[in-house]
Every structure is written in C-alpha cells, then in structure tokens.
Length: 114
Image (tube, rainbow, N blue to C red; front, side):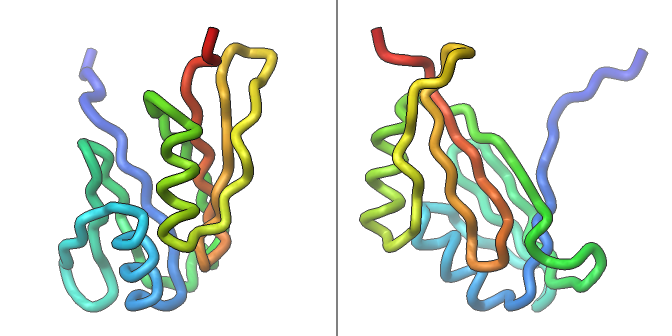
C-alpha cells in the first residue's frame, strides 16, 4: 500500500498581496510559483495560497497542532490578527480560531494544561 507522507492545505485567496502580507505577519515565510500562487512555510507547516475564484475564497479550514495555543494566540494578536481566546475543550485540547482576510479558518490547539 502507498504511504501518505505529507498533507498540505491549499487556501483560495482573492488578493495575493494581501494574503502574503497577512501570512508574513503570522510568521510564515513566503515563496512564489507565480503571481497567482504562493507557498507559506512555518516550522514544517506548508500552506499553498491560490488566487482563484474556484472554489471561492474563504472556504478553507485547517487545523494546526501546536505546543502552546495561548502563546500562538498572543503572537498572532501582537501581529494584528483577530484570534479567539483559546478554550479548554472536552476532548482534551485547548483550542483557538483565526480567520484570515479571505475567510479561511485556521483552528489551532494544544494539550490542555494540567
């Protein structure tokens, strides 16, 4: 059986310069394929940013497993991002949410602190 070795999310965006600026402020490094397609990398996480209308921007959802949800929320807030306060969830994760300027949702979580 073929083994899956990685998964990368593709987020539809309406305005590439705006998306690149946003993800740069969140700590991602950006590289380009062309003016309509870019890659955002941060500590082994790779996001593809695709300027497209199909699917329409804003429908992407991804989940980041992090070592400290509160620290990530504070870092992103300091960068000017709107982030929900992480909360302890019954399934043992402390989770927060951020929506990028195109409406794509980034959920993130870490283990509940004991």
